[in-house]
Length: 380
Ligand code: AMP
Ligand code: MG
Image 1 (cartoon, rainbow, N blue to C red):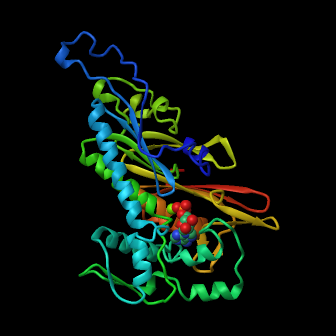
Image 2: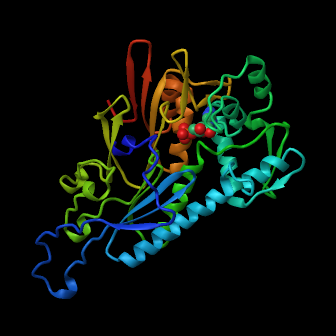
Image 3: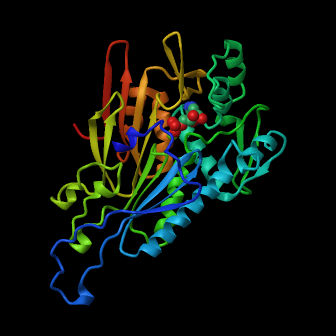
C-alpha cells in the first residue's frame, strides 16, 4: 500500500499546527446537468487537515460537500488526538500514564473512565494472545535501548530481573471505582503498540459525531481507519479516489463498477521487500488497517537485526518476522494485534484468527534463505 512507502520516514517539514489542503475537485459526470437547480447535486470536495501528534503526522482526508463543516469536524478530531496524546504519552511527565507509572506501585490510582476501559481492553488482549501483547513490556523496550533510540544488548541477568517485574497479572483492577494498582515495583505501562490506534478510533468517532460520513484517518501511516466508503453512488459521480487520497490504491472501489463486489476505500498492501509489488488490495469500510514492521526501529550487531517489538515471555526482540498487516473493526485492535501477531508468529496467529472472521492478516516472515508470505482471512 502507498502508506508503506513512507514508513520510517519522518513527514517532511510537518507543520506546527493544522494545515488545510484541498484536493482537486472531481469532474462531475453529466448526471444532474439538466436537472432543476435545487435537484442538482452539490460538488464533492476533498479537504485535508493534518497535525503532528504522538511523534507522528496525523492526517484526516475528508470527502463531502460542505467544506466549512468538514474542516471544523477534522479540527475537532485532531483536537481529540492531541488530548489523548497529553493523556497517554509515556514521554510526558504530566500525562495520566506517567502519573500512574509513578504512583500505582504505592497506592491505588483512579483513572479517567475511558483510560480505565482501554487498560482493561489491553488486559483482555494480553490474555487472548497468551501474553504476546503486553503493555507492561516497556522496561524491556528500554533495556534494549529503544526508548531513546540507542540500541544495546542487555545481559541475561538484567532480562531475567525485568521479566520478574512485568506482566499484566501484576496490575490489579477495581472496576467499581476505576482504580489500578501495580504489584511489582518496576512495573510501568507503555501504550506504544495501541495508543495511536486508540487515538485514530477517537478521531473517527469525533468525525462521525460531527456529521462526516466519508473520511480516511491515519496516524503516522502505520494505522489507518476508513470511515464509510468513497462517495460515489449518492451523487452519481465517480471520483478518482487515488488522486485525492495519496496513499490509497490507484484503483477505485470495485463497488463503483460491480455492486456484487466488496465496497470501501481501496488500499494496496505492498511487499516490504519490494514496494513495487502489491501483496493485496483491500477495500475498507468502517475498518482499520495497521502494519508493524521490523524496519521501523532496529539496530544491528554482527549481522543480527534487533527490532523494537519484544517477546514479553522471553524478553528478546522478535526474530524472523518482517512485517504484519492486520485489518480489524477498530484501529485500537488492528494496532494492538499487528504487534501481537508479530510476536506470535504464523501458527499462533492462524489459531487466533480461526474463531475471529473479522480479522485479516498478511504476515511476511524471513528464514535464512527464503521469505514466506501468509494471508489469513482472504479466502483460498
Ligand atoms: P507497533 O509499532 O504498533 O508494533 O508498536 C511497537 C511498540 O510497542 C514498540 O516500539 C514498543 O514501545 C512497544 N512494544 C514492544 N513490544 C511489545 C509487546 N510485545 N507488546 C506491547 N507493546 C510492545
Ligand atoms: Mg501496534
